[in-house]
Length: 409
Image 1 (cartoon, rainbow, N blue to C red):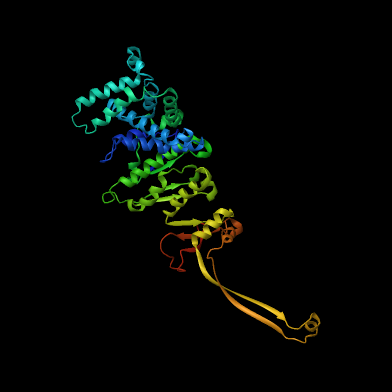
Image 2: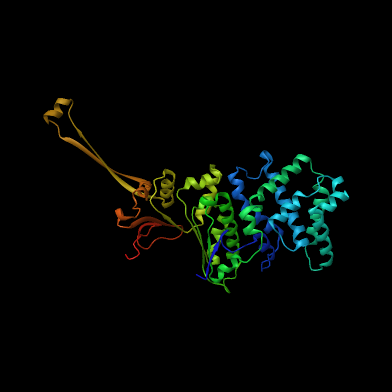
């Protein structure tokens, strides 16, 4: 049990995911855009639940870009001024920013502003740090906070600020702040050493907080798996995600396409496709995103299911094959019905063969699979599908398999 790490409020593991991205080993560590993307990816869960994909109605693209910009300039200042980044500091920085040029030039505001104090400290440290190759980023951040931000219209500025504070609100309170801002005594890098991380905050029990907590660790683990040097650290790592529809983010499709090269296994479990589509807001865009993700998963295991959308999708996944149907018909001759009744004419039979393309795996097949338990002698049937190649047993891209629930069987 020494290799098992339980993560949750009742356990000692803590992980400041933003500070980890700032200070972790590797050439890409500390890049502002990566830290901002990490925060935005985690916040997708909250934004999706609130029906907000970036805010601003028809100006959604503008506000999404503005939110990322303000996160970048905030991180640029905090990382230099304090040497670390945390969600509470981001919140304090944004909410103490100047709302006008007069306020920025006010001595009273400067004395009490967390934002101004960190700008001054960041500039002081930057002057003393000859190795900072991105000092121009700090200059851009300074120009934003000292001129661009105070000159924004009141409504625009307040909308941008509220979009940022709304995004990090859940991360800045309660268990999320305790687990992900208080400090770090565990990082996903430990997975490469054989540690097993079990997340104890179920969505059923913790709701949105549980979902966001799991997404933080999932995203950080994905990045750690992809970054490691498999020549030095070849141990395979699996990432097992149950009730996946509650934890999906836009980063999952990319990870699914590259994890095999990093000796990573991505295992996703869900009940039906409509539940996943609904989690992404429904519509064609959601279906396209899920199709892209599933296309990058090599092996699909389809158990008993009666959902029409899911069973039809499974049939289309297996594809259609050429089949031949035989048809026959019989007609009696004669000029009238009486002739036929008296048998004066022999019946005429016609037959034919029709070539058609039909589903190789019928949609109804999934609804007939065994589901285990005593009634099925503890046998569970499933349809296995491979994205690439064929199964040796039948030469197809799918086959039926049976799993035993009896550990002694």
